[in-house]
Picture 1 (cartoon, rainbow, N blue to C red):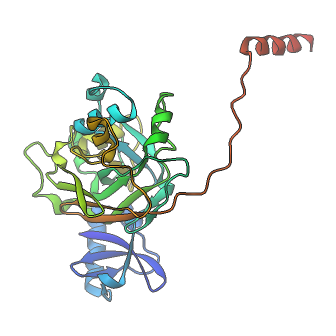
Picture 2: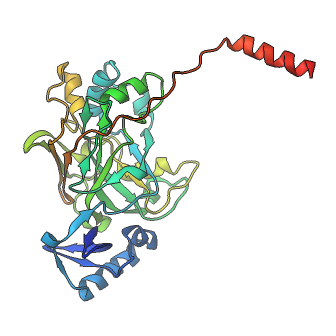
Picture 3: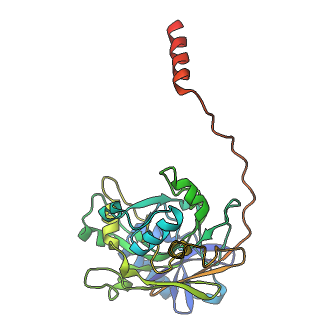
Length: 332
């Protein structure tokens, strides 16, 4: 089943996409509520909506992000991506040994989620805007310290994720050994729909990896293409790792990481030693296509207004300050 969030007749509501029509749920229903109810209950509710709701032509509905996730963990599971981006963002060669030890991830911003056809507003101080083609898995059931086998039963479904990146900001941040942060958290796009896990029963290879074709276009020109099964770890493995020593909860999103072979511009910059293709600019149209899920399109908007200036860091003689403070304490 294909769940969506649509804006229609002045309201925003969960819906089921069925061919050329969408079937809205009762007002106030959200896809996140359906996810939290569990996959069987959500499928039953979806069937009820298709049977009873007045259908709306797709052309008359405006699609939003399918859900507003409570958390977003973004993994990095494609070797080609790691190799190319390290060269362009970190001025480093190859893939670090630590990458092979575990499916690493970072937390990104759930408050900056946008949906299909949204205009993406780059940070004012960035001149190296990039897209990132990913598939995101949506957690459907809570769990802690899951095995990979158990984790497979905790998957609700999948959607497309564009992890937008300001590469120049990211490069500066990661020199400190933290991040990415402000190089990433200005926009994360999801959509166009959330496709339930049962729809992909015939799309797994013998090792349990999803074999979905993934393609990226800029202004109608293909700039990258890969197959999702080139991930180094499966989605159940990502859930299992994320659940270690903590909890995953329904609605949490885990990104696959950017696909290889041109899943972002920075990978190609690293391989070519120059910004070719060029960074994204206002007016550029980015289209991500994932087999079995759909097409996610966004346009780059005018950069944000410059942010207020922060003060420079205070520099101190740390030892002298400690001595002054301790002396004052002793006098008291």
